[in-house]
Image 1: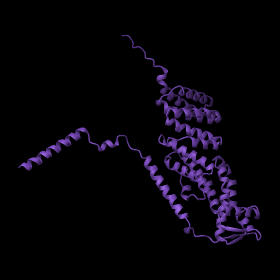
Image 2: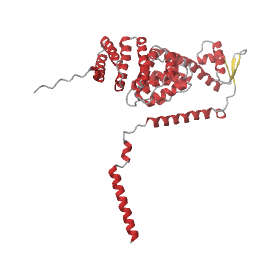
Image 3: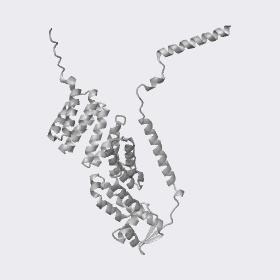
Length: 386
């Protein structure tokens, strides 16, 4: 018998399989740290992806671009060189309505900008793009973290803290501990910059206790309002803060430490010399203390009058907070937060496919029910005739 002819499929029909095998090869090259081979292979994989326009290739292509960015970041150290490729790929994914590609590439571009400290460009990029929230929860969590970090640098602390806490709530509870640690570190700094003190149970979590120990000491220094303790913590854990990329934000906390110290002084004294303020806050000299007090009065931190001739600060009588709108504002913030959490929980609910069909009767069950109803009607008619 003649042997059947061998069917040879063209390469174009096997592109999904080809890219799938590319991903396996790339994973192995990264694992064994074969830098040059990984760079060459990922460039070829991206070139192959760009030759096709298939919806079946969208998810695989998004994974390829993830490897493309990570490999060039880890081995090539040439983030500006790949930025144009990522921007072009994002533009293409938008034109093709490839939401998975859009979500992945937005995060890769934001990471690219933040690695080079291009926060202004990242801020403009976020304002010009729309993230597809329903595509992938993991990608959305990363996006929330990146946007929160950008807003923190842009002094939008309230919006930043909201994004970071939303990222923590949406992150997987039993995995991604490294990501959760990173987000918590930034969220603690942002909360301190807002003038609030993080709760102690944040630092007592088993998987976070060791990593957040320097931030606990920092929080204690800010809470007490002692500038000397703050400087000690900064000198002791400076390398840790720099490695976490939070050192620049922490330097901003110096003003918060001084404000906290002045608030405590304002509740304890009706009049105090600038030399005493200098000693209590560990400032350089009395003149510096006077300037700090003047700025605090202008910002509304304390209600006082500076007596320059006598060299003291005259504090005014403390106003009862319950006569102001502060309690109402605080309650409104809490109510808004609870409503937002409820709405996010409703949107995040997932149902098994065709689950509603369990409550619907089949055609056979419907016929049987109608037959029983007809028989029952006939029996009622017969009884009425008798």
